[in-house]
Every structure is written in structure tokens, then in C-alpha cells.
Length: 59
Image (cartoon, rainbow, N blue to C red; front, side, top):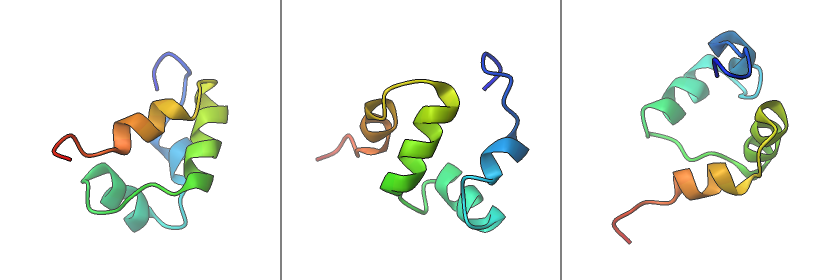
């Protein structure tokens, strides 16, 4: 976030509510495809960065 000069407030706009954002950060909610696509554009990275980060490691 620092590298892209992005604040938490900027990221909250990606999510429907602040609670959705907080739930995602706490691991209580899965990220949607639309959110992945938006975040990839914001951070100028491949969407796979967020897909790989959201896959549980205990599969």
C-alpha cells in the first residue's frame, strides 16, 4: 500500500461496506472476483497475486 501511496480509505471503496472490508482483513470473508480485479488495477499487479493469497494453505 505504501509503495502505491494507497490508504485504507482508498481500499474501502472497493468493498460494499466497511464491515465487509474488516471481515476480509480478519479472514472472515472471501474476496470476490470483482474485488480481485479492482485491487489488481489499483496495485498494478496480476489478479493472481490476490487469488494465490486467498487460497487456504491447508487444502
